[in-house]
Image 1 (tube, one colour):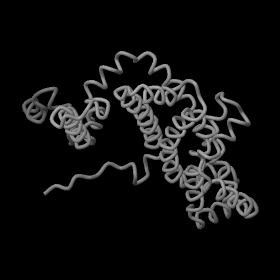
Image 2 (cartoon, one colour):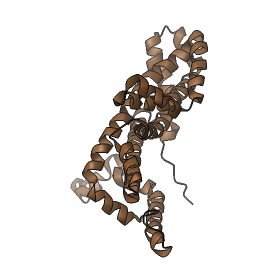
Image 3 (cartoon, one colour):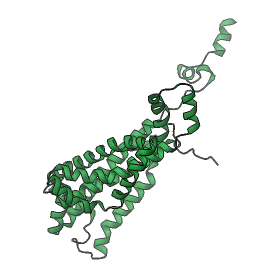
Length: 292
């Protein structure tokens, strides 16, 4: 009798037992990260496909010359013919972009903290930043050439200037948005300055800082190409000028696509770091589906 009772309450199979541990069903498997990304970007991918199809058909249907608007297939074919040269130039441009961008990060965040922490620093630095912000950066580029020559330095300096201001301003806004009541409570408990920065100031400022970092990526990409337009005999910006002079429009489009792809990759890398660093922030939460 006891054996029959035990047999009645025991699960009928190992699979059933594994799904009823503790009276609750096992958690569903997590979706593949790539599939989740594609699902979120489904509308964007569909839009891009429609644009590419329309672009491929437009020059043929409207009799647009290839030197004005080459179809994507011709752009891809042209790229395959010069892919090694293009990628070598892209590496040079990317190194300029990342070099200036990294210097901007290293300088901007400590400077923003100093501006927020000291009234003297704020009154001294902010007017200087305003002056440099309103000056067109391209107008300063010839001076960099005079001072530093045609090497890596003047191009990196131009990228630095373009990325520096949005990162600094976003970091300043982030540090100023820290809740003063939390800071007062931390001081009252004898928390050290370094601990307050590491545990309170920096975490609360990170959402704004990452906003500036993502804006800085686009400006750094632009600055690297513009710098090579002005002062370079190599790099993707230099090749774009060469292809334009030869009326090689397919390669101009290919070069634009390649540098855009580099910027997108760096942007999503920064976004991935943001998701890893501040997963608790509301901006990193996935939207909750509303069931009818």
